[in-house]
Image 1 (cartoon, one colour):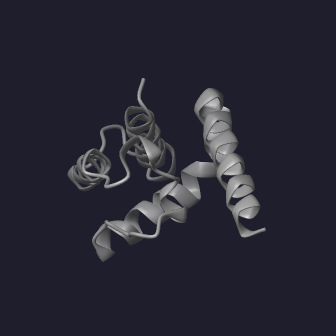
Image 2: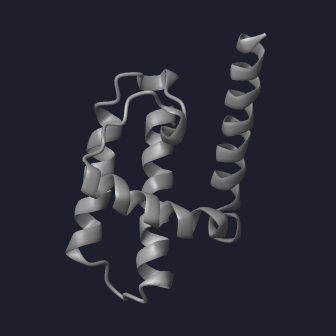
Length: 109
């Protein structure tokens, strides 16, 4: 699985968790289906491709303001809970984040 596919899988899982457990929706609403589609399109068009960082560290914010705020809300809620629902994805994301932070600190020195 490529890095972009993995990112898409993770963000889709987060949106599903948010919809099902936070919003208590049996079937995901059209609004969150669209957000999922939007997020996947943005990842497909990512300028950095397989070299991308986590979106929160990216120098280019490619989401429109409305979608950016909505995805932040989803990630704030779903992120900490991913470890219980999708531990493999969670640890992978945590590892990538730590790796990025260590590399960026090394570049500063």
